[in-house]
Length: 279
Image 1: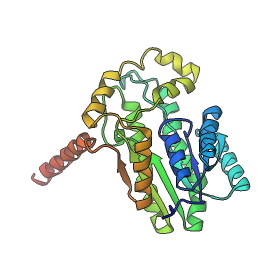
Image 2 (image 1 turned 120 degrees about the vertical axis):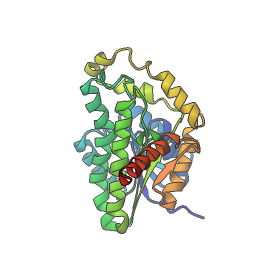
Image 3 (image 1 turned 90 degrees about the vertical axis):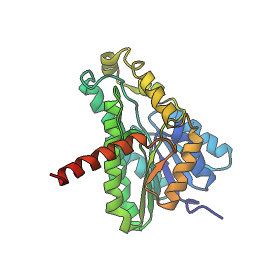
């Protein structure tokens, strides 16, 4: 049976590697016409070429997701050359600087939020009005289990994914009656080169402020990955994401063992409310 995505135009950010590339390839296999975007034009082009080599339809664009003007230009080009965009995979992101909250440079935090949070806002504000007007659309945010719980030395990244979850949840309530589906993918450990791409694209002036810090949180990260069930491939994460998006499921976890910290936080809230009620 043909996928409901067949023939539709899908724009994927951060499509040059990792989950973004896997999403682009999987959408193409389902018959979507894929726009692979990345801040790195060369890796976006590689993804598009891989799709075309497999018989799919794809083009690539360099896109700085932190720039509203870049978003508007990219969408105008796609809709001029192809068709309106009905699927947005807001996937681009960067990683933590792995410093304690007291040490995180505010410049780093601003840059991380520009890429992890404001980029999603730019994409939503550029594309969802058209989706709503047409009565058809799908928006997939690549979040993280870090959106539900926190880790020491990861306050910056966790805060951005908490914010992204709030944005996604508000959006789905705003557009669910207009035919637009919104999902929040919350992976635990997925094999990718996120740390390497973060360091590659980090502005030099900010990089100088965190020199040597990125290795500090490795033990915490490794322990969290092991506790949730180990590393998953980007292809598996992408398959889970698109299956959930098709079903209209909002929260899309990738690991059965990844919810413990979020559940403990919820239990703390319930206990605090119960104690208040018992006064």
